[in-house]
Image 1 (cartoon, rainbow, N blue to C red):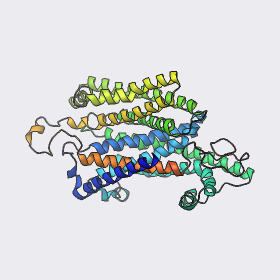
Image 2: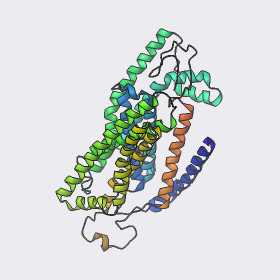
Image 3: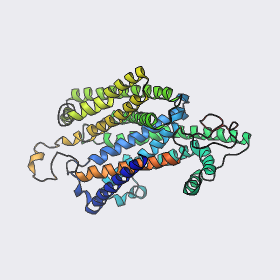
Image 4: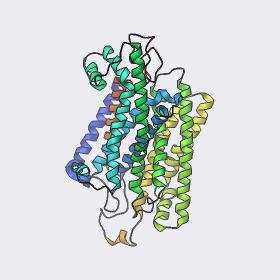
Length: 431
């Protein structure tokens, strides 16, 4: 089954690579974007994965900075999810650029009054911080895995360990562990405003567009951050429920995760309710029209089935039912359902805003396939998106197999019984 799983992923990556190659050879003409609808599926998935990343990282800060010991087993999963989700998000926005070969211009030609300029710098700092924190929480295990692995695996782990070795002296090991904990906390504290800047900044890119009343609101960055917490917690819940080792603590950890998930979902629903009530009451034509399209128009089924159903009602129901049956599977499904529901949230944020005609009659003034207010992704957009997602899932899966991300026992120190490993019970270098 594992071999079949990797074969399927690689086939999807190859298929998606062909679509991406066609996009780079033929330009944006392979998409169904128009002059009036310039953001589509790739931007939807960009903000979706950036949200997954920010939410996963904020969950890790709750664990390592605010000492939520009940969730310590999922700390590495949260950090790994944050990194790979960020990679996916950046890949999607990269292929959406009209001239992706010019991505470096923002680092050379400065415009410090641009929200996007600040956002790019947040991304760069955020990547370094997440990788640094991941290394700190795994460095003892990486050191131990060098002795366990051989061949290519050993060489990879040696490179990733950056020369760090756990001391055989118990007193030195304790100091190493304390130093690691201290730096993880410091990076976590620094990472809180960075993560808020990463996804709140993404929301600000939308919020400052005055030509789109549906976006032009101070509540949009807040909605981005809260929905990020929802999706990040949901993703970690799904991964931990289905792929981590079954032990005596799994049920307790999932109970804590699912309680957090319900709290974030309810908070997100309150913000959505506020957004809709104020937007409809304001009477601003552009915003009212967009919200009407979301509630009962073109995107109504995505809102009620996806955003409200899969994103809120289904996961809450599954969690309540799982508490009665003590089922880890139902909690994992609740997380998966929420992740899909957040995709619907992103669709309803981006696409309806492009259905509003800026000047009355503009939609009928010119007849051209590229001058319409309707959009549905092309096959190239779909296939390339599947390829990118499969590629990132493949990278995550390989990393999961190779490195101590999960709570599997990947390595044990030769001094078992005396070792104190960061974030893990004494006596082992369990992953």
